[in-house]
Image (cartoon, rainbow, N blue to C red):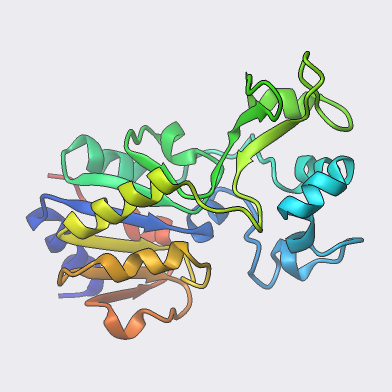
Amino acid sequence: MNEIEILQEMTEKSKNIVFFGGAGVSTESGIPDFRSVDGLYSQTYQYPPETILSHEFFMNNTEEFYHFYRNKILYLEAKPNDAHLKLAELEANGKLKAVITQNIDSLHQLAGSKKVLELHGSVHRNYCMNCHQFFPVQTIQESRGVPLCSCGGTIKPDVVLYGEGLNGDIMNQSVAAIKSADVLIIGGTSLGVYPAAGLIDYYRGRNLVLVNKSSTPMDARANLIIKGSIGEVFKQLEME
C-alpha cells in the first residue's frame, strides 16, 4: 500500500482521530507563514516581526503594532482549503474528535469544524482591556490608529503574543484530546514552537501521522510520514 492508502485505512478503522495543525494548513489558503523562506520573519521591517508581535511591544508601541497587524496578520478574504474541508467532513462522520490548531484565522470553523482548540487565539475575537467588551475583527480592520472602546480602553486582539502564556483551559483540553486519540495526525507544522509542540509528547498511541513538506523533530517517532501538501493529501481521502 502507498502512504495515502495507509492513511485511508487508519482513518477508516479509527473512532477517535485528533488533528494537530500549524501554519502550513493556512498557507494553502494564501495566508503567509512566519518562518518559511518567504515568510514574515524573512522580510525586513523597522522592527523584527517577532518583536512587533510581542506583549511588550503591544503595550509600549500600540499604534505601530496595529499598523503591522492590519497589513500583515489580517487575511479576512482567505477561504478554507481541502485540508480544512476534509477535517470538517471527518468530524461530521464521527471520526474526528478535535482539531488543535496553532493558527489564528478560524478557517477550521469557517469550513464547518465544531471542536476547534485554538492554542494561539483568533483574530476574530477582540476585547477591551478595560471593560472587557467584545469586538469583532471588523472593528480592528475598519479603525485607524489604536482601536478604542467607548469606555476609552484599548482594544486588544484575543491572540497570544510573544511573552504571553497559552490559555490553560485550552491546553488542558488539548492534552486530554491527544491522550485519548487512537490516531494523531500532525500537519503543516515544523513542531518548533513551544509549548504547543510539546503537546505531542502526550500521545501514547501507535498511529502517529506526520504530513508536512519538510522534516520535523518528531519524524523518528512517527508511524507514517507523508511529505507534501496537506491539502493535496487530505483531498485524496475518501469518506465512507
